[in-house]
Each structure stands twice: as C-alpha cells, then as structure tokens.
Amino acid sequence: MANPILTSGVRQNLLTLQQTRDQQSVIQNRLSTGKKVNSAIDNPVNYFTSLGLNDRSNALTGLLDGISNGIQTITAASQGIDAISKLVSSLQSTIKQAQADAAANRPSAIGGTSSGGTPPATLLGKIGGGIYTGNKSAKDLALDTTLGGTEAPASYNSTTGVTTDASLGLSAGNITLSIKAGNTTFVSTTLTATSTVRDVVNEINRSGIANASVDSSGKLNVTGTGSGTLQIGIAANATAATALANSQSDTLSQNTVLGLPLTTANTGIAASAGNSTVRTNLINQFNDLTKQIDQLAKDAGFNGKNLLSGDKLSIIFNEKTGSNQAKLDVQGETITAANLGILQAVSGTTVTGQFNIQDDNALNNMSDILTGALTSLRSTSSTLGSSLSVVQTRQDFTKNLANTLTTGADNLVSADSNAEGASLLALNTRQQLSQTALSLANQADQGVLRLFQ
Image (cartoon, rainbow, N blue to C red; front, side, top):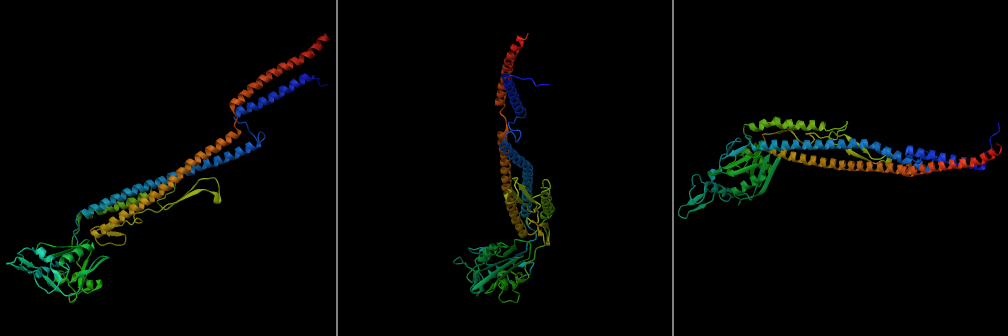
C-alpha cells in the first residue's frame, strides 16, 4: 500500500504539532517532579553537581544524631558534677557541725600537771607564791616573768607600791621552742634570756598546733589543737630535735621552770580520755555522703558513655576521613570520693583512707580537702562546659550547612513552577493555533477533491 502524499503545508503543521507536544511533555514532567533537571541528559553539569551537594548534605545530616548524643553525654556528666558538688557541700556542713562541738580528747597541761606527769617545779612557785598584792595580778606577774637573769621570785614594795617581776634564771643566750603534734612540727628560735613568759605564750599560739595561756592564779596552761599526742620542748642553745628529746635528767631542758613536765618533750602529753558524742553521731552521715558521691558518678552516663567513669567521647563533625576529619575528643575522668581525696570518718585510731573525726587537726585537714575537691569539680565542670559549647556550636553549624547544601542543590535542578506553568499555557495556545493551521492546509486538498465531484 502506497504511503499517502502530504502537502508541504500539512507536513509543516504536523511537525509543529509534534514539537509542541514534545515541549508540553517536558514541561509537564518538570511540573510533576518539581525539577528542571531530572537526569544527566537534561543538564549533566547541574545534575552531577546537585547530586554531590545532596550527598554531602545527607552525610552531614546523618552526623547530627551522633552530635546530639554527644551533647546529651556531656550534659549528663555536667549535671553529675553539679550534683556531686552539692554532696561535697553537704560534707562541708557535716565537718562544720563536728568542729562546732568542742573536742573532748585534747591533750592539755594545766597548772604544771598533765597526763604526761607532774613537774618538779611550777611557774606559780617562781612568781613568789602568795605575793599577789600590789599593782599587778598573779596573771600579769607570770606573763611578765623574764626567762633569763638571776633567779628570783616576784616581790612587792608596800612603800612605793612597785612590783618587781620574777626571773627564771636562765643564762642561755638563745632558747629553742619546739612543738610537735602528729606529723607537724613547729620550731621557734626567737626566744632569748630577755624574753618573757608572755613571749613563750605568743610563740606557742603562733604554732597553730597548740594554744597557751596563763590563768588568774599564774598557772601556764597548754592545750593541743588536735587530739593527738602533743610534745613541747624548751631548751637552751639546743636544736629542735634536742628540745623534743630532753629527758628528766637533761640539764638543757627548761620545761620545768615554766611549769611543764620534762616528759612533755620526749613522751608528750597524751590525749585525754573521752570522745565527742556529737562527732561520733556524725560518722555515719559523713560516710553515707561519700558513698553517694561514688554512686552518683556511676549513674551520670548516657547511651553507654560515662565521662565521670573515665570514658572517652569522640564526636565527629564532618564526613571526611583521616587527617581531614573534624572531631572533638572529650576525655572523662574517674570521679570518686577517694580520688577527690575524701577519707572515711572514724572515731579513734585510723588506717589508710580514714581520718579521726575526734581530732581537730584531722577535721581542719578534711575541711581543706573538701575545699580542694570543690575547686577540682569546678575545674572539671568548666572543661565540660567548654566542650559542650563547642559541640553545640558545631551542631548549629552542621544544620545550617546541610540546609545550605540542599538549597544550593535544589537551585541547580529545581523548576520554576510559575515560569513552567506560563510556558505550558503558551504551548497549549500554540497547539491550538497549529491545529487550526493544519485544518486550513487541508482545505486546499479538499478544493481539488470538489473538482472531481
């Protein structure tokens, strides 16, 4: 069968209709997909560029989950530090309660008599026994007594009303005062023969490990600030070790002239019997709080990571590998009461890891330890806060960057629905015109047909 022969006009109008139909199909596809580039055929450069941008955006979006988990892990650790700090503050309050109740076992030498023994002579005897009349009290007489000079008791002139101070008769030019309690030793070499008992009292008080005073009867009283054995040695021209090693036959010793037994130097003043009931009752409270510190630190984890148990947290910020990978490593530390230096409280003899709550010095040391623990916790909290700030900043940046990449990718391939809609309307109009032109072109052939009718 022979193919029909179409006129040039008809063929041209058919071609125009075909082109219009193809263009309509393209625009309809763009409108349905929302993209002007749907494959590499449409625009290979834009297509593959958009594909790369979307791939990176998807990779960064996938990292956001890990970043979010990292934020929660750091936040959990930071909250744990805050809670532990409150527990340490509670421990400080417990120590203050214990310190507020006077220790019942401090070593003391009062009026020359102590648990270390009774001295052969007392300061009270040196100031003249019953000579207390005149313009000085027995207390002032004792305090103004000089260490050196010719030994003489205090005297009072009833005619002139003048009191002559006593002298202890120590001829040594330099006098060493040595005080020891536990592992703490205080040494003073500032005393001389012209020094007074008042100077001795001041030096003892300056030590921080013993308190001294003279009472209204002229007796020298010495009390340790802690509950451990207290050694006090006063010797002429002696070293600190010699001052503490004086025996009752040691001629260097000057303890007795001050009303202190010789044995306070070598044997020491033992702690008095008895403990504070209040302090004893606080032991369980203190130790329970220390246990809570350990338990709270173990519970401060998130999704299997605990920065307070020494775990290491790695947070990845980009999709690259090797040296180009951006990440943050947050190294945790093991937080326990022991690691913070906090000891267990006991009443009496201690072993490693314990402190005697009955001992004032031990309480003071523990108070300092708790203050240091708070400082350490604040430092850890600051470090975690800095890391959290970095991770949150990177989280916001990653979100914005992923959005920027997606928007850029869409701009390369997305279709403008308004423009495409207008184009489709124009093509529809062109199609109608082409159909009309095709109809007119066919009328010429119909005219020839009428000639045969």
